[in-house]
Image (cartoon, rainbow, N blue to C red; front, side, top):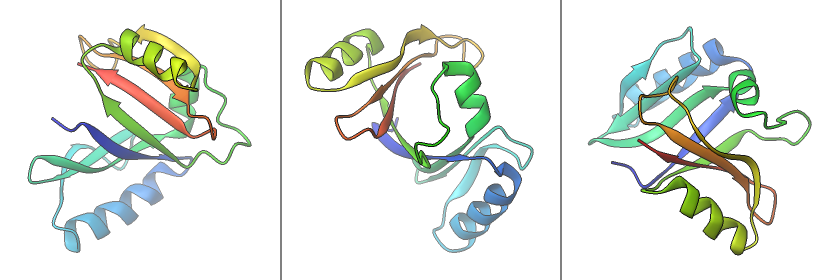
Length: 130
């Protein structure tokens, strides 16, 4: 399981899907593991490790309540953790700001939990567990 991987947030999912699918499969040796051009999510792996995930920006904003307009959020780091609540507490104790508190996300997986934080410089980070 990946500890940390990048996720591109896009408002043009189909176009970005074709772009990354072409580059990642033909050039980087990755393969599509999940998703399709219709979205809202896709990810590519190489040697069982995620190379990149693609996510529809509007869907993330709707599900999490995180305002993604006007901030320039084009990427988000995703950190897989054992305990989302503890990770969010550690993140805030070290200068982060919770923008979507720890929550169950059954629509993403039966045991999925996430929290979304901004680091001290304003970058978006998703904490996730499955």
